[in-house]
Image 1: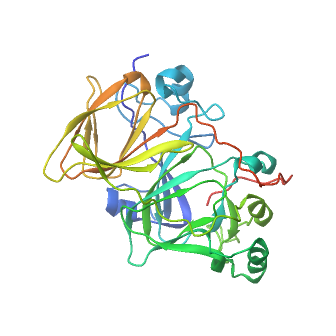
Image 2: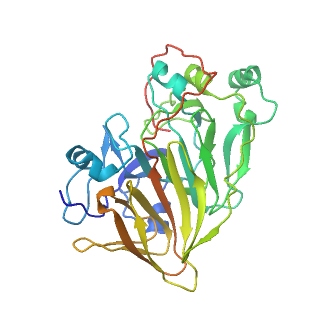
Length: 349
């Protein structure tokens, strides 16, 4: 099989908290009149499967490509339950999301779900925008349970103001929510398990109250996770560009990268494993004899490991995210999370 850089058609998800900002921010033609909260850019899920949108492999699904040549696609990374290991999204939070958690490894199987560690990289924000992440110092499990009963559980969450260029790492077990007025890229494990603690007493798109998962949440929350901070790494010069480490994992590595405002560098990306590029602003041209890709703001592509290395041209001032699954990535079990036999569904956030 001959591999090429891969670009996929976006999969749009209607969400009660979503908006229409992808139209103005990234010039997207969104489905008409509906609140679009998520664009799944690279997805290999039973109900959402990315399809190559251009080039010699156009029309092939990500799942089909993985089955055809797993080593050629992944390199020294491994699938997750037979699927591509990561899920990549753009999120538009017009309103605040539910207060929620994803189960850590020690609980996930017993709860009938999957771990979901994720990274948020913010690309736009309204003034005063904030996120909820972790617990306020001193909050106990008893405090948390009592506040759920009284409808004041949001007071137990640590709040952090955020703006463009900020990033937050969210390991499974960390309670969290996006506040209103935020646009971001999300890199995560290939999972769609979310347990809602509280949803502001609102109804869903169908007019009915949205389901909560209090027992599952209490089994999953890390009650020692107090006041986590934003990613605080510095930008560092690396040859002709600057890089900033966002996370080294597990289960994935991600960096922010940018080109100087005074230069348009060309450089090579080595590929011992597949690499994902997502453009925050500016443009990148991914060179390939048969299928070069031109990426603008909000565009993503997947570089298969079989290419071994690719050459990219970057316009001056461009900023992008570069992410890859860790080689042979596995999440280590997190101690202290008791298994609980609860039958639960996987739900959108």
